[in-house]
Image (cartoon, rainbow, N blue to C red; front, side, top):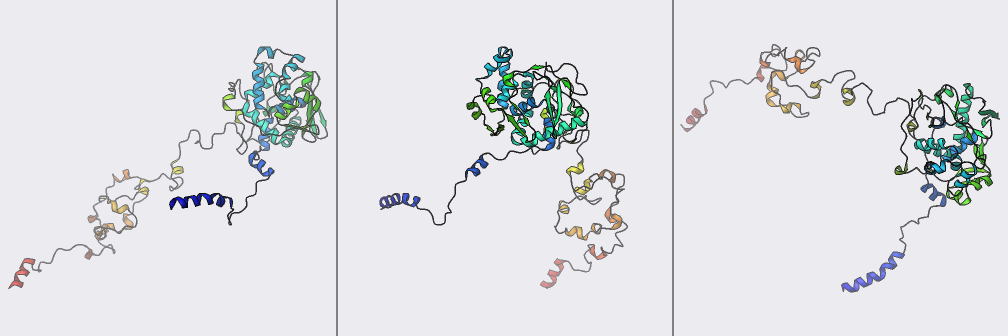
Length: 453
């Protein structure tokens, strides 16, 4: 019989599984937009103060070099690959067309390839990778805000009298924007400066500007109060001039033909780049470099200028901005021990917790009973009958006379029976004391004998 029932169940089970339940609600598949939003949630954003922090070291670069740095920062892994490629002395020695031909088959974005002609800038970006990744994330996700803050910082430098045309750079205005171009189109000089001084009074003291020391061989001499300039870098024509910032529309305008000649279309698609209307746009989230592939940060050389922070101190989105010299929130103040009142909220501010406040002290002259410290427990009969247990104003400990248990030694209290305040105390009538048995009462044995008689 069991075998028959098992056969029937196996025969009907597929049918039961295909029949929809009456109470089940139909489940609609997510739309393409919902699926993309779930797979690619909106990245956290930087505040204006954080953008100012990270842009301070490069905001005064010539326009074309600035956008190449911002674009290349969205490819941190490619920058590391380029830095390793330059460590080969044969590659580092390439110039002009030989350099262009050697870079052609590499699957890097043109912004990364163009920076290979500035090897110290490649080293600066890879040595401070946390800052570079933050810079790339800001430009990919907040391009309009990032370009607006560059103009904000340039305006502050100009108002402070620090930004003006020199023999290395030409500073001009286009509408309400400030444009910086090389004076000699064939030679690029990179500005070097202390961001704590060049922008005048820094707008947010809680987010000091980042200072990056010049890489070796990049700048000769000590850091001056104004703007200094790096050694000159000759322009490699095929790698230069293919893109510039469109400040009015807050975008990067590029020449698609020249851009595609540096990197073929397969690499452009692979790098998630969208070129529409002559504007460059990154379409994929910025991938952080795995820890195992990150280069070791260099040892800090020289003295950090006052009013600046290191690149590693840049605050991340959602976190408070870095503040130079500020202690960690959870750390105690330097030179101070943890205050007992902070750990014991019950204690009054400004007072030292008295040991007697933690546990009731025994009455002077009497042993401590464990039952006396238990709240809600009825008093012991012997304690009720004892006149000394009733509180009396004269027996209350004075706050000055008894500051600590050790102070009770020089002022011993008399025994409770000899206290002068016990006799007239209204709460302790004389009848409460145990009286001796009446002498006239016959003993028990004598009573029993009388009953027997």
